Length: 133
Image 1 (cartoon, rainbow, N blue to C red):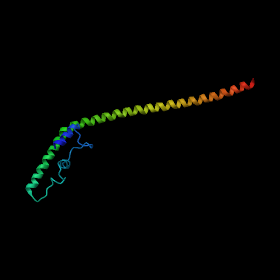
Image 2: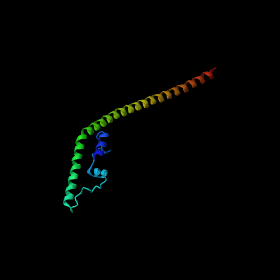
Image 3: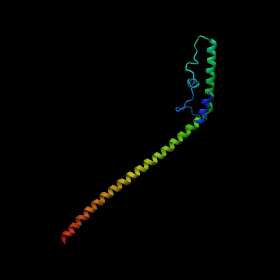
Image 4: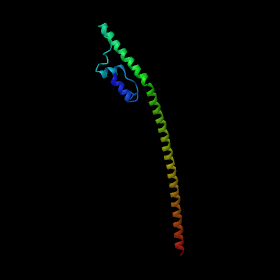
């Protein structure tokens, strides 16, 4: 449990990629026990009581971890939301720049076509002038 707690501390309150805290099964797995280790077997009352006490201890520890790191999680979520809104602003700026570039390109293409038409017209005038001499 201490190792899990250190991992949570080192990751700013995040235990897993899903953002959920550790489960009883995860604690058992990390300790080298099967997920059914703390289940009641019904054969030995003393053993069942001992396993129930262990399970309660793990659940209390998990609640403490969750309460201790909940403010950190909220802070991380807020930072992620801020980052996402910043990314949205940057993305919108790129979209606007792309749109502006498309408009500039369209205007340049129109100007090129107008200049080509002017060149054709001037060539015709030049041929007319040359043929009249």
